[in-house]
Image: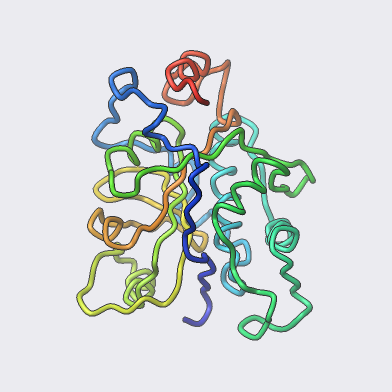
Length: 255
């Protein structure tokens, strides 16, 4: 796979994870519409590669993309460079770009999404001005329940998606095709992307671009999905969809 890298380590299980379904009463929350999202705030290929063409930092580039969207929605967009993202990749995993070239660097081992999430909550990821962006909490979604995933994406704008990457998906990406299930595909590793919209398919951000993912692909390959509690997209205490943060927090008592 020349030019593009993966880098998500296998999903782990922790009974202490906050689970979306434990705290949400569906009847209290608005039903997501058939289509939604704010992905058009950026051009289809204007998100930035952020090092994931050379290094296995997808689980760090994704949070930067998520923060870019949230802060732009909030009217104070943060910007990230490859150096910013790699500095957190280094701090969080011990990665050292000087230890060897791409493809032959023993410290470029990828990341566990849960550990990245904890880093985002405790330290925050750094932007190009040196400011750190923290999340208030990270909540595990039931990746077998697409309606729950869509509800979380609608309420909180982005969902982190970790999945097993089949070899056929790289060819589909280069051809501009949606990621879809292909019979006989082989798994090449793990990848992390940011789910930002529901249109005909699921729109995700990866490798600096928007990419479509079919529901069938998600259901077959997704092994973890996360939603992040952040106030960075709020204006006057409300989300872009008009949800009052205090009321939303009251409805989701554990948050």
